[in-house]
Length: 265
Image (cartoon, rainbow, N blue to C red; front, side, top):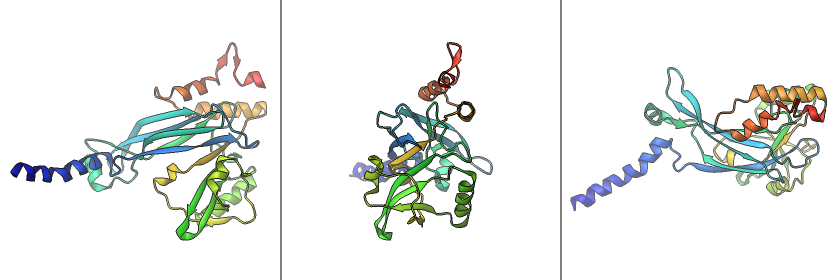
């Protein structure tokens, strides 16, 4: 009888222990997915590198101290599709988990990156011409549509976008029915129509699991290609766990006496 009682007392401990160690999100795995396309032609891009990078953190003096944690990467298929499964992570571990963090670090939510030789790295320039879009449905607020983030193709458009963002801190939603199907089938022009809505979208882990379309801007002229190469080489620092990104960046270096992209200039 005493053994049975001790076992009953151990059950809550066994249930809570993984939660304490892994940051209140055990088992804490999610699948991120989407599509990468050309920002101008809206055609799928095959062979783009998509990577998810997590940071491991411990308590520090005044702030947390973080380093590189798990890294996962994939190549987009012929339809531009990709999928990565990994830990949800935790950006707000709380007091108890922070204390335990001195012994076992917690993992933050991932950052997602996109790269394809011949294109500008995603969101690498002030005037970029690239975009992101995801489906959003909130039945309680009667909201359904595609949340489009497209800062602009000119300095004036980007300036207007930033002024609006500083003013209300809201997202721009294009009202459409069945938004995820439209994104998957590319039945959308990724432009702002007249009837957009400015909406508040709360941040949570479900944000990472929404189907997202990323539009990359192609570098066309010799000057643009040189600029894109520089942004790619200087903006990424792949480690040994990122062979796909390392290989993509190596395409910027000389191959048989000529640069990979110079052969197309």
